[in-house]
Length: 234
View 1 (cartoon, rainbow, N blue to C red):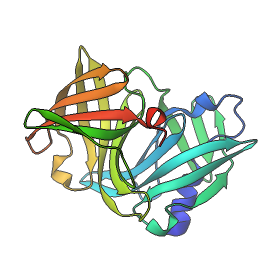
View 2 (cartoon, one colour; view 1 turned 60 degrees about the horizontal axis):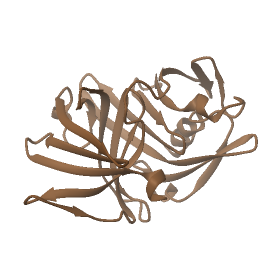
View 3 (cartoon, rainbow, N blue to C red; view 1 turned 90 degrees about the horizontal axis):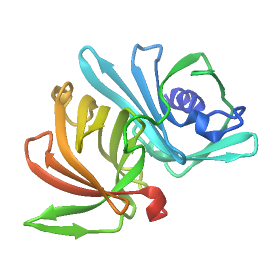
View 4 (cartoon, rainbow, N blue to C red; view 1 turned 30 degrees about the vertical axis):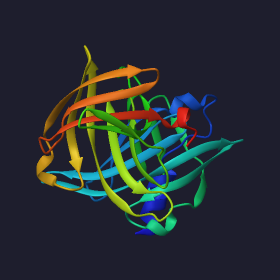
């Protein structure tokens, strides 16, 4: 099982491209078990989710941060549902991208997008919620809820980056049009019956903060504030 995780992570990043931005975006493939593998890469962070589509079933997720080190790419795991003992550890990998295809270790990834056209590409952490008409803000610590987006794909993950504890995740495709942020759920760890749901929210960017309001997947009203990890320095 650990070997499978490492093999998947080996596919995440490219060494030989002259620009780091060439790997930013969304990628997809299938593994030998028929699982769909969805990967999102931003300028510093990444996530991988594995799920089945028929019937819907969440399989696992892993991710964290990455950095280029000369001709190598180092990744550091912040969450890993198959082996939380890997959280906080790092690996160094070599991968090759040619055009919009990434091939390594027997799997061929297809590029889905390069970070466009959605307006929310990046890695965000939740920093505030509105309750009783008042927005309560907090600084993220070890317990994080991250939402990572490419130009067309999203994934949220709730986890503890110190203990490796995992609370939940979900993801799929999204659009941003005329002030509406719309999610189409393709996997959801807490309840597979939510797969296929379409959720529409109002959104605005206020001085770099993403204000997000509407109804949750349970039908409860929500108002959230998200900030990029880059702006938070986390």
